[in-house]
Length: 352
Image (tube, rainbow, N blue to C red):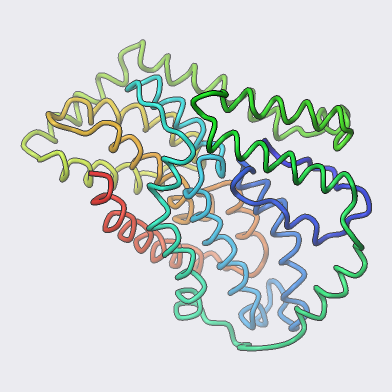
């Protein structure tokens, strides 16, 4: 369920921050279209300007922290990234494994929470701001909140419906299909006039997601039917013989993760590589396929940190004027290695 692009009545800029990763399955909408418009107002409060030597005063730190945390939260929740949902469907079709919301969250939470806590500190050490303290942001935020006024009936209704959808996704997966739950909540939103049908039609990103999902799942199935996946899997399997299942999992996860340097889209990466990796894994004796499939899928969000084109909101932050190309590539490599090392050290032993 993607939050409406049309702002709710009587709300200002800060209301756009209410787009948690739990129920916004597009990190582009959540971070690039929601968080970025808010935080881009912060550096000028400290006279930190884009495409200017003053960018490093604090703007660069804020922008990198934002994209780095976005990548972590994109892996933490099944509903935080559109390719996560695509991956779950491909896994179900390829190896007949069903992944639910809670299983996904519990698998990534130990590593994810640690990374979320560490990102601001790591950025402070590796890409420190020149300004260490200031009171401008709290004052600005207080004024913006005063301008917005109290929550409206539509916003309270939306909050309740979002909680209902989230509860159904987490706790009622065995009784209510997640898609049915989302459609039910959307229908109630229309009936209660939280959004109008014109709002729904205007949400091009949501309709685009529907179209791409149908196309990409069919494409992945077509690659399998034509024998490409089996051919590539056989080629890779030849080089994986002799490895224990645990070592094979680590190697395949690393290959899957770092080949993202070759892709400008996590969706494209998922469609092209995930079925291949799953098929390769299925040829290894003793491979725990459910754990292996889950571990592969959990890397989709964090791999977005690697490049300026690695995930949907990356070009937004890269183009902000606060993150020069050299800095982005360097930090992407450093954080990318930190992310995958923490993930392998914590998550792999817990799942195998």
